[in-house]
Length: 97
Image (cartoon, rainbow, N blue to C red):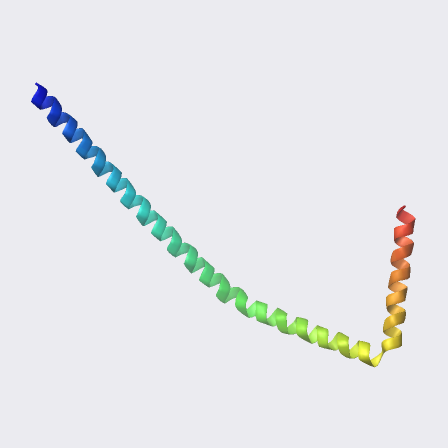
């Protein structure tokens, strides 16, 4: 009877180890698959948004150059416009208090 109990315990331990190993393998496979899918999605987003980023970047650079050219060509109008904006902002801030 003691022999049978030991064999049963060894079988239970062996089955437990096998189940743990199977669980680890399933976990590692799932983790690997999730990483793969994440990297694929990341790559797709970079591809999709990379072109848009470059377009926006070029438009922003063009707007900056246009603004600089306007300020250089019309310095007095620029300063007066900035003063007007500051004056209106001051009136609005004063009114709220």
